[in-house]
Structures are given as structure tokens and as C-alpha cells.
Length: 115
Image (cartoon, rainbow, N blue to C red; front, side):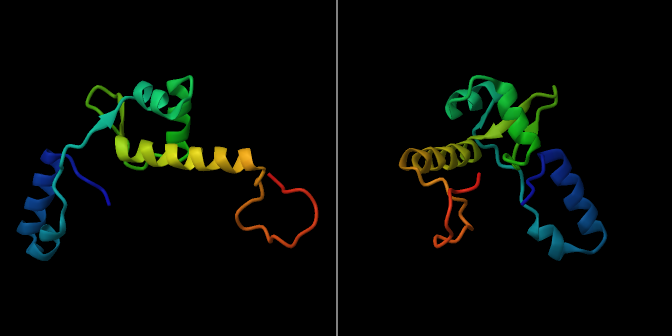
């Protein structure tokens, strides 16, 4: 779901209503501010040393709800950063246990897991 900034939300809603599409106008989700982190704060929470790592993960699609401020700075929804952290922690736990087989690999296959 895409959440629109308030000015754009108002404009799109008005355009839909003017076009007689009240059904679609009612389905729009208004902007609701939520806690967001800077790339540095996200890096700290994730335990990585550089905000650039977070930006690289952003480019790889890890933070679909991230957005840029009017000044061009990225903000990362705290819920999404926490979800990525949970996935990293789960992977670290699997690594600690030696369970490195890809999730879709059959358990019955012989040989070492492929990574």
C-alpha cells in the first residue's frame, strides 16, 4: 500500500471526486505520520557500521516504505527496520546452529548446503 503525503492525497482525492469516482476516493489512505529513522539510526539499530549499507539495502528493495524528505534525506519506517533486524537475527541463529541450507533445498539431498 502506498501512503500519500497530505498535499498529494488531497489533490488526488479531489481529482477522483471531480471525475465522479467517489468509490475510489473513499479507498485512499490518508498520510499518517509514523516513527521513521534516519539511515544512521537504522544502521545503528541493525548493527551495521555504515549508513551506506542501509542505503544499499534500500536499493535492493528491503525498505519499501522508505521515503525521501523534501531535503532529499531518506527516512526508514521503524517497523520495517525492525522486520529486517528480525530476519538478520534469524539468519544469524541459523548460522550459529549450522543450519545453512537454503529454505527451498530438500533435506534428503547429500552434500553440503549451497549458499
